[in-house]
Image (cartoon, rainbow, N blue to C red; front, side, top):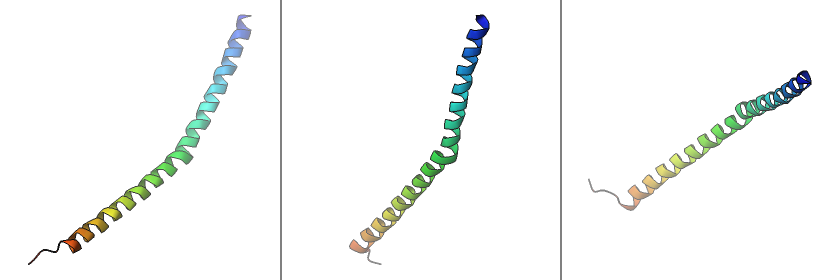
Length: 65
């Protein structure tokens, strides 16, 4: 009886470990790279918008030299 309970617990834990490894692999190989790329894209867009706004401000208020 004890052996059967231990074997069942082992199977349950083994299944959880396998599922956790699969989720970790999906995160590291798929989700994290996609999120990193999205972050880079958004950062680049924000920097471009900030540069464009700085140029608009300079054109709207030219300094006299």
